[in-house]
Image (cartoon, rainbow, N blue to C red; front, side, top):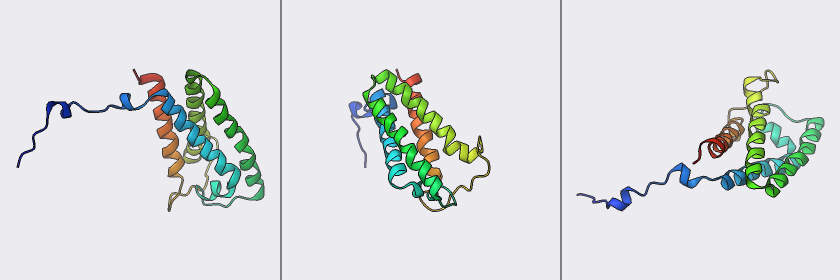
Length: 146
């Protein structure tokens, strides 16, 4: 048995540079923050119990639900901005959110000894991987993409 590949099929590799652009990054950031905003508004208890070995009390639910307004506002703002500004705002917000939420919880940057949940699904790996991936994509678009 032999398989003959044509020269053109060997050269049909798609690179990350071809697949990713600034608009895709902004759309992903809007989707992530829109999803989190909706979860914050509609299911604040789940925002705690999915990622921590803890339950949300009424005060925590209050703060999480109220914080959804700022995240919804961000989604609207980056949707209305010109693309270069939207990339900058999205990247800054993703990095800031990653540092203050999942990586602060994991590494105790500002908050110490939080009871993180790593068993079952969803768990605290979800926001860690999500925010790191979106941030990496943003850095690629902003600083590496040709």
